[in-house]
Image 1 (tube, rainbow, N blue to C red):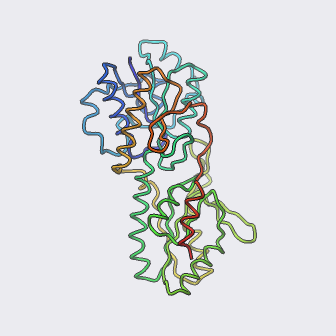
Image 2: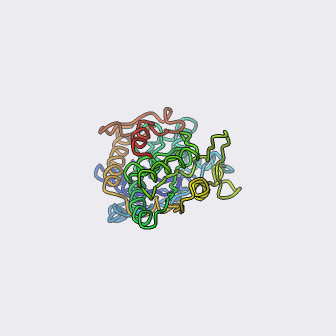
Image 3: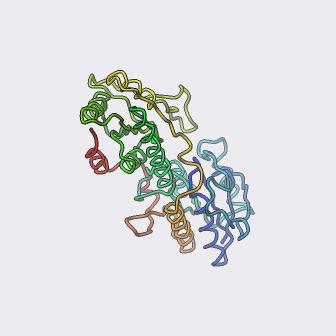
Length: 346
């Protein structure tokens, strides 16, 4: 079989580990893996590179993706679907495609399978851990570790200067990174899109800490969290009025806005740190390398078994798969984790 492998959407630690694992598994069974360049653009334009032993050697610890990535969606591009059909009907035809990406990539992958008949396997990646159908996505652990390291470092500065430190992390629709990093780093308040915590609530929690003799506090906020007030007012903070390639507003700045509100209400000096893209760059953690490798091997096994139209998934400790038809929507934070975090607030 000739099997295409692509990475689509935002970059993420562990992408190269999946590429390596899937390619090595396919090569070991006598099949031909090829890399599709720049996501689904590579499928539509038959832009391939060989994924032989040499090509995937040494890429396990590398961040980013050797295949490059893009947000190309053949269903939104002029003649995109026709290009995919033409490529699949010509000499560049692929027997299957392994698509590594997040929620939007899984949506495209599902439509290609259902509407065009492309044999596909999805592999869930995103630092946000918000893909439905799997317990954890690779890239998430690395992002949480980066955010936790930042909290650890902010603790020393906050304590030395008697400050409130606000850390803004990624998380447009969900607060998985904020909650896990907040628990791991001992945050004193966590704000996420899934649950309303008012500015007044945060200020009161910080004031209680000071009454107990704690002269510093750490607050973690996901970029998609809204500023909420007891008056009922809500505000989502945007970096600009522009929208991204998916039509979503460009978020950013909630940390600075929250810091201003906290300082005004408490009188305590408050500073903000925004991690931004640092969270999804660089070397993947050991946990993400292992998870990504398992995903890649399992994806190749599904292709060889002819079980397409599915997404690899982790359920507990078991590597399994789910139908792409069931991968819809956003997986929000299990609020039990936030209840654990709240034990340490105030």
